[in-house]
Image 1 (cartoon, rainbow, N blue to C red):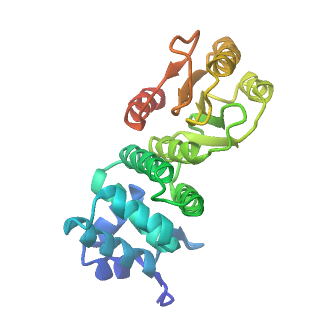
Image 2 (image 1 turned 45 degrees about the vertical axis):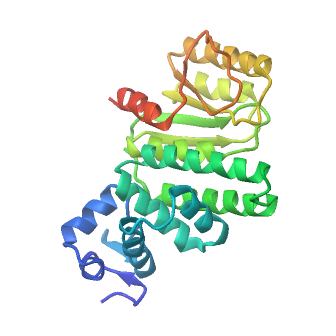
Length: 268
């Protein structure tokens, strides 16, 4: 028997009114978070199962617009509300890269509402922090292949916005690539040093819309491009920052769907 809050696969299936094989599939696909016992058996949090079921019911009833419901959950929801909404979106859309693109649209809408005064700066900060924490929790539950490919993920220059990296991490994990989080304000020289050590297959750099100096981003792209080319490491530049139109090395991707397509080629 398990505790009242932690469920076996069979107990979770009964609660969700599905077959145990469905619970296992949802777990394997990253739809449901789980932990493992010392013996390797899955355990599911009761609240997470209940919230996922409720999320599916809300989605099927057409509850509000996607942006409205996302923003309401992010600004007023509790931890499990946000986790559940992300997991519901993964089940509904069939891939974390699609969830990432949907969230990208929500974040853009939040920006528009902040500019127009419909959303306070406090609400925007609360929503961003809550989403970041939830993405981190879910990302930690997604397995990667031991001995598989590895990717550095880093913010460009002085960019402090890491939501793009967290979304990229889910996409990487979904195809079995291990993310190595460098995050904010990592010097280009340090990234280049890690590339030179030879234990990296890919470098992913995110620049948010806050980075508007194309000359600075062009220099960063050239410096990292030279290091990556020298060591046969792929380079991906993402986000809505002012990346140059022409790159000396690497690719510029503008959607997580395209990122996923690129990663499937890398993972192969």
